[in-house]
Amino acid sequence: MATTKNIVKKGKRKRKIKIDTGVVYIKSTFNNTIVSITDETGCVLTWASAGSIGMKGSRKGTAYAGGLAAQEAAKKAIKENGIRNVIVKVKGPGSSRETAIRSLEAQGLEILSVQDITPVPHNGCRSARPRRV
Image (tube, rainbow, N blue to C red; front, side, top):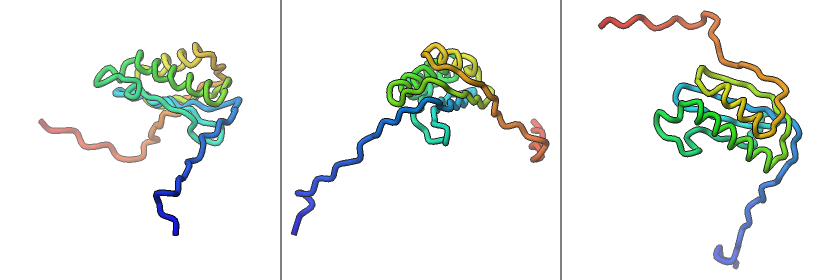
């Protein structure tokens, strides 16, 4: 009978897939910026955020931090998956929207289109009552 000490399981290797066109989702809030790069079906290949780069506190919400996050995600995507062309989808009201797009372009990615997918209510839910102080 084999004991568990003798059995060595090897994990699956991370496979590298060469993808020509990807989709970049930039979620820019007032407090942070998250950049996700996916293939065309929506499977996330790489991601980076202002917090994962090393920014803390209020510096995460700056345009500079958003540019660094996009730069880091683009480097990973080019190195691991060979992405060259991207479609950019931007969501949120943050200050780093344009800076992130510029830094993607500076890394050598060709931007095919830019879409704003910020959710806007069509007068759905009733807003909260005003505060009485």
